Amino acid sequence: MNTLIAASVLSADFSRLAEEIARLKNADLIHLDLMDGHFVPNLSFGYPLVSCIRDLTDQPLDAHLMVTNPETYVDNLANLGVGWISFHQETVYHSHRLIQQIKAHGIKAGIALNPATPINTLDSILADLDYVLVMSVNPGYSAQAFIPSAIAKIRELDQIRTSQNLSFLIEVDGGVNGDNSLILRAAKADILVSASYIFGSKDYTKSITTLKGL
Image 1 (tube, rainbow, N blue to C red):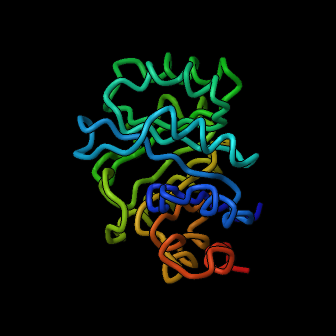
Image 2 (tube, helix red, strand yellow):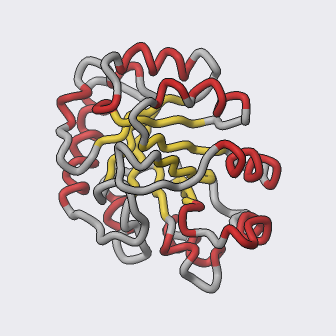
């Protein structure tokens, strides 16, 4: 499987959003960072912007819920045409129930692991996940420095899915750029999320191609 690139619009220029989205034609997913100012110390955007982005592109929308009540977002995001939803297990009492709620809509379900959250917290639920989102920064802000320990976490997840014959994908988010994308691909990350590296460049297509290793 070729590496997929999820372009995070958190770093886009919202004053010319249609133009920004149009420049992401070779991205595989559009990544949506939804923040509530409670689980993370930042606010991002809500349903109106998600709806606007949905109208601007046919690319799959990948929503990362950095919120304290992710279960209340699922139905609305499903109605808006979001195809991927990940949440942080620290925010819910019953992760399995929320995964089933997401999957009932035909949406891919994932759990995000903060840098300090160990993989073994997912032992009982990995078989139910479509993907695991490895955070390589502490969630909440764009343009943070990559935390290198994420690489070992990616490698461990790949070893687990191979040894247990599981099919979940590994997504990595935070500080991803052209310099570290090679080692992330080598560690068997399937999806690279990038915000400032793409939107801070002059040529989005070239930046995405570099991340893919093409």
